[in-house]
Length: 426
Image (cartoon, rainbow, N blue to C red; front, side, top):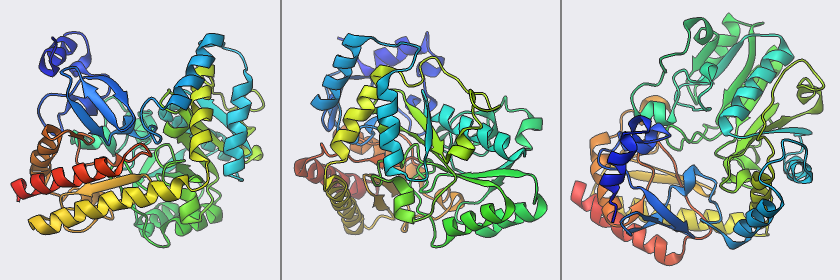
């Protein structure tokens, strides 16, 4: 019988670091990664047969739980008709129509195979539409691994303490202006310095890649005003928050309309999917109608479209997000109560089916504040929870994810495990 340790040793001989995405290597928390053999509902099982309550959710898309029968059937039915065409299929239009209906400012959609591609392409489109080169992003916000965006990024880059990646040319990086999340003056300063050079401001409307950080009142309204005044596009990267914090994404909660939106995760139902969209006048700058080129053989492939449509069938049912939000909030309240009982500087908060936990007394509002949490204490807490069958993202700078498959018993078991773990690290 294989073990997690033996599988990790095997993987390191043929995969870089033994993984295909850096944060999976457990470097941020130490120890041996768990090699997952199967998943169902709210649970995952590793190769040793140990069951975990799953709060990773494949980093967001498993909002209805793992291997939901409706989604699996849709995928199997689509697979029977063909795995990939490299040509148009009807489901592309069906899923795009759903997105346009939920986000009225999105008049045209372009599918990709990943969130990275969606963000990268939206950025290229913004530059092509405005004829400008500079972009503004925020320290700690992660938009995938495109060179222009992998500058002071969050997520895996932040977890490894290398927020700027080697291999990004200085000539390219100088066009990326890095502001501070929730700090409007830091953005205004760039517009004053480069009033005619900034093509766009790209932001996670509710940050999730430096852990979950909510926007301060007026922050996004201020970004909208600055972009409008200076002729720049406002891009919301909703790859993580779209269809997860609310059916209409973070922009539904915030009440601010971006020029372009990037999507992913949930609209693929667990399959590789990304998308970006916006008004026709902007989107039709894309090839084949305009000069901004973007293409992908697997973009809009029938398996991914089927999984996305099936997932939207489920989450568009009346009351889905109210129930999801209420239950996720119950879990968060239980975690905060456990921290109070243990006397540990720990807190948690949620937005829809997305949540964050922090080894600090109050939720952070910025990248700098996230960096002040007790990382060593988080590492001990993480492994105690893992040993007790609770699978959280293996990093102190990642949000965690709740699904409609999590039961009251799962919530209670998680809170009970947290009580023990927090008491042990007090």
